[in-house]
Length: 512
Image 1: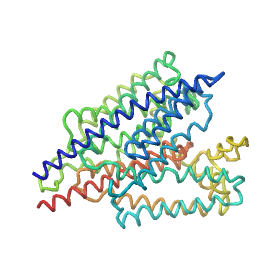
Image 2: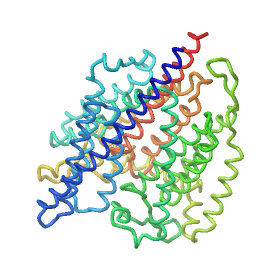
Image 3: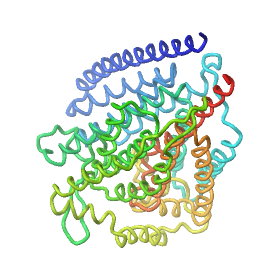
Image 4: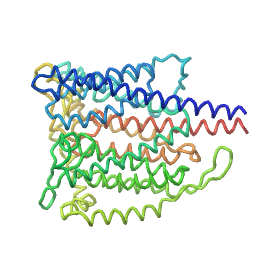
């Protein structure tokens, strides 16, 4: 009787939450349209930019208020704002660069809502000592070093140091929010299923960009970054970025969704969701291919090899002692290979060549070697030049009318760290990142009979892939705010899903 009442209560709570979120979205849309109208009227010669600033500003303020009252709903609105922000950046390339800072206010409100909400409203579980030692301690040691480096004499302006600290530190507390976001296993699985399903509309727009870009509106057609790149052996190939601001971000999201799909397929799913997840996985791979970013395909191949142990997990013991079979991945993988072969075969010669060069060991080795060799060109000495002196942090100086002093040509993660933090920072980073990854791996592999054990491991594989991407690719995917959010959400989900698996086993033990 008590268990039935608990389930009914959870169901009613979820329904009420869904209705509240729906109302918040409707009211937010109305407020944004009113703000857009006012902004357009006051925009003068640039009514489009005025509308965006007016509507976006009002929406960000509304989302911040919602986040202060309920950080879960605020975090959901943050995801929508991040996606809308990218479309705005493409539709209005003349918009000021500081529009990207809007989401930071919502992030800060989520933090305030989470860390300072009354405990009687929602008791928070303290992270276990092993998590604090294996994951949080290396993070705090690194961020302490980053803050100290903001006072390096090589930092020419205090805003530069603050911007560098923001780049490294601002999004890390998302780990706590993601770890606590889901209250129960059913909601977690259903929500993450929907995250994977978004790969389908993402691919749909990507296909339109690849084949019918001339008829698309500017928000979906214009690229924030260059839309073509050269291929080894000659020729140029176009990029596609779907809803996102850059093809690199879209390719990274595809990799994230691919790892999510693999982990979720090893949980118990209905037949309908199994079909949707397989389709989403195929869409993620196809999207990575059509994005034009070959690194995503290379890392997907490595991820498949790394995720092979999941294929051997054919059963698990539930908390009540029942043995449950996990779905196999072999047959679906073969179907995916067939569909992929048909997709590649249907593309032109340049697209086909771009596909095969993604797996050419010589080209991959050249890119990795270049990322290491280029450290000498941007070496910062023993202690470096200080936080924010390399990468995109210096763009903040435009707010005060000063030139950008950062060395943006240091495009690799290895060069950013070497130039900013020197030899000491480079080796300290290697030690602390290894410490953090090994600690996260332990949380990802505990409770191997847990419902989300495969998903926790697949998220850990994604985190390793994103770190590799950051270090060895000439576009640092941890300097972009959205990419940072994806990384820390993944780390937080590992902790949160570990907590849910642990809770299921503890409740089963109490019932027993």
